[in-house]
Length: 217
Ligand SMILES: NC(=O)c1ccc[n+]([C@@H]2O[C@H](COP(=O)([O-])OP(=O)(O)OC[C@H]3O[C@@H](n4cnc5c(N)ncnc54)[C@H](O)[C@@H]3O)[C@@H](O)[C@H]2O)c1
Image 1 (tube, helix red, strand yellow):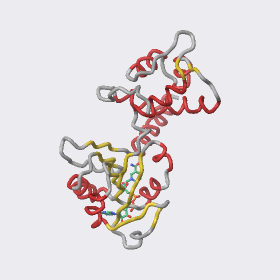
Image 2 (cartoon, protein in one colour):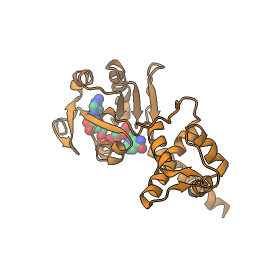
Image 3 (cartoon, rainbow, N blue to C red):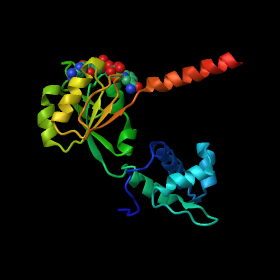
């Protein structure tokens, strides 16, 4: 077990958002056998200023060495632990439809420390099936399984109008963090972590940039 990690609390969100890219870059270098990497090299890859890289990494215990830079293996070990990717957390997914199935097929989640223990749905055609080895249960079994398995995260991929009901169920049965993929804005107690994720806002940004640039041409 690596002992370098500091508490992630107080780290600015943009820094946390950049860290998985630092990690992916370092993992690639490690595979190629590179031992050290400079902040300039990382910055060039990220298209940001080297001072930003130094600042971001200073939130961890990774220390650069004069002239040689950062040890690549240390970046991989420290960031994996710092970001929580080296510890496996268990999640339940509710809504095993099109998006839910895609997430169940994503091996990247496992790589980044998230294990989806079980999925839930209300559609009889889906219940009882296994999607990428994850069994789909009726939503009524959520309570029993949440008590039985050590699950701390809930992933919501149901139609937006059902998102609040599912969130309430998750909170009632001990889920501490909710990853909400629906466009609905769910209400939960203050101590529950909610992260809303949508591909469409990124798409909107692309369209906006495309159309904006076209206007300027
Ligand atoms: N965040 C993103 O980028 C993104 C991308 C695609 C879809 N979405 C959103 O994800 C959600 C699902 O989209 P989809 O295309 O997979 O829809 P879908 O209809 O294919 O799947 C929804 C599933 O939820 C199940 N369901 C409905 N009510 C339920 C309940 N109360 N409990 C348990 N299961 C229930 C349905 O039976 C179905 O299997 C929607 O809210 C959609 O807007 C978000």
